[in-house]
Length: 297
Image (cartoon, rainbow, N blue to C red):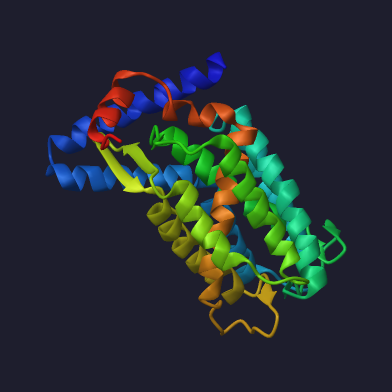
């Protein structure tokens, strides 16, 4: 805990120095945009490295090489995680998030590939049934981003929904990803449920100055970026949806799937790393300032 706090303190001191340097030379809104971009990039470190590895491996890999590309991606992901922990660039809580996401993501991958929703066309040794083990790290990258973004932006979620409601919604969404193959797809009811549970929640985040964004809008924007990243993955042929070829774009309907999955991801982070949302309720001066800015009643 003390190590994580000292690392976070060093990061914040670096951010302050960078912010002071930029504010002395750039207009305020430009500084905030620069800091936002840098923090987003730092939060997406693991996912960005994994996406780069997918693209580079597709460009250079040869079919007759001893190591399969999927296996190399799996070993790369494990090595990056180990390195981030050794260099203390990732906390143990964030590592727990990644492990839990890998397990839940792999379970979904096993079912979805069995159901024929998508497939992985290349060979691999590190695989279960038709699912290469690196695929679980793609879900883990989403969890890593959420946990790191909450920390890097010192996010507050105001008002925070009842915890039991967030867990029930996440469970319903996760179950529907499996059950819609046999029963009616309830995603439209689940979309409405996200508005009911999180419709009043604002995400407050710090880029040197405090800003706020509706959580449902933030989830939609994040799902749009994930859909773009997914198109990069399918364009490389790393995985393909049923009936899709590498030249085709992923269906726009997948934006909705990512939107729902992000709420599962958020709740998974709150369970695996409960300290990540302490700021949502902590009665510090910033929280009081946020509360004063919120409409009463």
